[in-house]
Image (cartoon, rainbow, N blue to C red; front, top):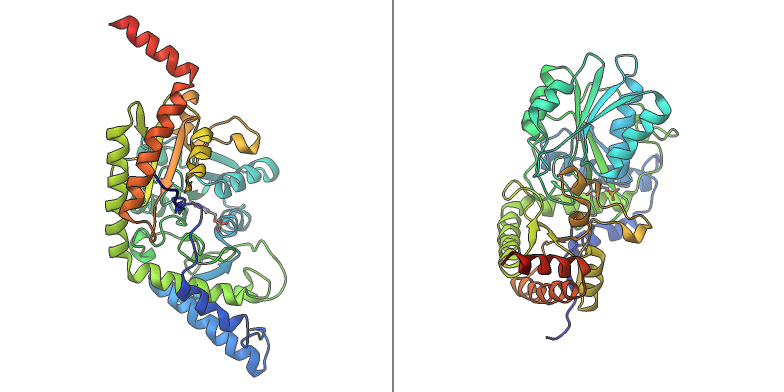
Length: 398
Ligand SMILES: *Cc1c(COP(=O)(O)O)cnc(C)c1O
């Protein structure tokens, strides 16, 4: 087999689309004014930002004044969680989240717990990575001020019942924030219909640049800013705007949401082909996440008896880019908190592989990847003492 370059890590980041680059270029060149300036250079840029804000708002059925630009998804999550916590601390000090959130949410919650006297409930999830509504209802107390549960999980793709959570939050008069970074462009989003109060999104997961995102926040909610300074973003986020990034974000949102049905159909087909071939051809494999309530571009497997890191390195040699939940590279031997939360034993969680597909994935890529993966898993198992032990045990049974 010849070597190709195949990117299957769209959940980590996406390539920037040509139209998106084109949308930002004028704002890196002639349109350089500071949007806060009174002169024509500034005014013209300010108008462009106003339009971009309206484009993004329209795509999620929000009002333009409910969109606050940030430096990405992590900042939007932090702004929502800490911003609400500090603004409403007199009302209560309890926050509810789930065990499978992105670190931008989990670590913001832990920070509030450790340094600001907040109490956080981390909800368990079921074997598919879905929050149980009974648990959520039972966790709400008089002191609860915020529920933050992600729309779709970045590792295993599980999609949460966001409408139901929003309904419960509303009945209990608790604010509801959702991290919709993975959902944007992959699930149709209407903030009114969903009933969320706050929502984090980012550009680089939808074929836009890194370092630009936004927080949607329904009118009438108080929020303490994280960054103090000028009056930008209605005094919620100081600092001269990332103008080119904002233009790019608006274009990326426009492209991702106008073609969403086609995108979902295509990526679902490819994902199912990938999942079915892997499960059929590679024995002792587990599909992580929900069989149907999952992101259209997400596949996540555990290959028993081997290490995810070893699979990744072998895939990289043949030009395939994937991702693993185990964090050996970061110097820790702990497997992903998400795989632990769905109840996988340590030794199985270590053999995880996430393959995420997107707009540039083609049908022949799937065949190439599965062909190589089958050989890699077989070779690694051939060297695995765990596999050897398992096979000997099998033989002893016959
Ligand atoms: C990527 C990601 C983030 C972080 O967004 P950045 O723009 O990289 O800061 C947050 N939440 C989820 C679910 C993500 O996938």
